[in-house]
Structure formats: structure tokens, C-alpha cells
Amino acid sequence: MDMNVVIQLATVVFLASGGLARGVFQQVSTLPNRRELVELDPQAKCDLCEDNWLLILGAAGRTGSTTAQAMFDSIPGFEIAGEHWGLLYEEFRIVEHIKATGNHSGVAWKHNPVDLHSIKCSIQERMKRVVLGADFESKSRSTKVIGFKEVRYQTLRMLHFISEIFPCAHFVFTYRKKPHAEVRAKWGFGKEYNHLWVHTTPMFLKVHEHFRETCSMFGVEALTTKHYNRVLHEKLGVRGCNYTHVYHHNADGGYLADDSRDALLTGECDLSGLDFRHSPEELERREGIWQQLLAEHHAAQATPSNDRDLL
Image (cartoon, rainbow, N blue to C red; front, top):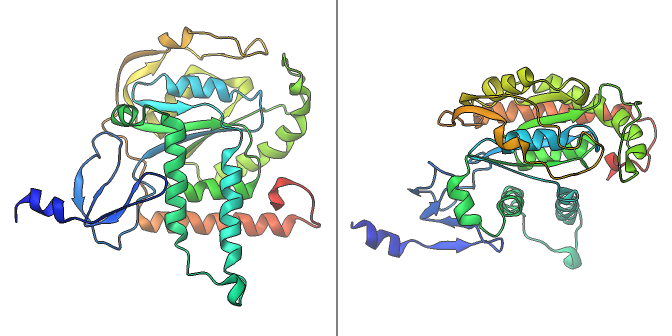
């Protein structure tokens, strides 16, 4: 049959988020070298590992997260957005409410079974649009690695939720090796960070211990070009270019504009070998580790608190 005829006969259902959902054919991804029309089973689910996500999470502010964002965003083909006021907390609450609806019986709470995988796909799609912005189509064609940095995700439950939405993502954790240190912060909120550093850093280290192949730790007191190049080459798989120095955007305690990151790299970066995908077996193994970590965490909590971990 002529391909044009087949395409005309294909039934495609659009999600409210604007992404293609199911049909005889589907646009697999907007990222380069993956944008192709392929035949799918009508019941096939979306692929949460189709895109390469790089997520920079800070143990609160003043941990070098902006430095990490600038360093990785300087790579041609990387699109790493800034903070978004903890937007995924709202998505987390929505998913928890959706799950809770299945715990009720009776006509007043009648619901059809919910496809949580599709819900996760819609969340990832929204985050992609938040990162790439209004120039979505153009940015999609030029982006090989997409991500964001945020300093508001400091609980194990949130890290697990983020790993569910971005199961093949690489994580960069920024933290302070000396969490009780005094810091310079022009806006005054630096003084409030110490307890968050103390709380979050051990959690980051614990997650990194179990997922070393996809997690990188960056202590703000010891940021080196060598370490950034090691992560660039060995963890992310970028070839052909090297960092020449570390970009200290907020070194003065504020958020002043600085264009020095334009000269951060030497050489031409080769991204052709990048693919963050895991096998189904590996994804199952990783989820098992997450469940173990969560179980250990809850067992260690003697009494409930008002901490965000109990959202």
C-alpha cells in the first residue's frame, strides 16, 4: 500500500498536553536523530526513556547548582533550564490524588482504572515544554540532552517520584561538604540553608551510593575542571571537547550577569554516542533499589513529622 494512503488512514489521538498519544503511527520524539515515523501497536505505551534527561538537583541554594547548570548548558546540543519553583511537587500531589481515588468504593467514587504510565508521560511532556519554551519545535530539533536545575527537591519520596518521571535520567547532585559553614548571600536567605544542607546531603550521598553509574556528586568546596571533564566524558559520553575552567556564577553571593561561560569549552563536542536508555531489566532492578531505600527510610523514622518527606 502507498505510504501516503497509509498515513491518511492512520488514527491519531492527541493528549490534552499537546503530545501525540496512540495510533497506527506516532512521532516518537522531538529530539534530533530520533524524529521518525514508525509503526506502533495501537496499545503501545509512550517511552519515558526516549529523550536524554540531565537533572541538576541542589541540596538547597548556595551549593554550586547554578555553576553546574551553566557548565552543562554551555555544551552545544544541551538545553538545561533554570529553577521552576519546585513545580514537580504539584505534579507529585496530583499523582497521589489520582492513586487515592482507587482506594474508595461506591457510586460517588466510581472511576475507571487509571493508566499511571500515561500520566507520567504527560508530566514529562509538560516539563519538556517548560524547558524548551515557546520555541519548542526549533529547540527540539537542536537539542540532544534536555534538563533543568532545581534546589527544592530535598526528600527521598520526591527523588523517587522524579526517577519515575525520568527513569533514564542522569543526575547531578550539588552539595556542601561543610554544611555548617557561613555563606555569602546578598538576599539574606543563605542563613536559612544550613539545616537543609545537613538534611539533604546524606540523602544525596545515599542515592549516589546505589546509582553511581547515573549520579554525580559535586561538592561546592572542591569544584575542579578535572571532575567536570570526568563526568562529561565518562558519565555522559561526550567526546571531542574539554572544559577549560569552572564557571563561578554566584561567587560573590549574588546573581550578577556573567558571560564568561562562552569560553568554557575547547574542541568540538561529539554527542553522537549519547544514549541514556536503560534496558527493561535494568529499570526493574533500579525500581527495586528505590523501594528498598524507601522502606529503610520509613523504618528509620520513629515518629511522623511535618517534614516534606511525609507529603
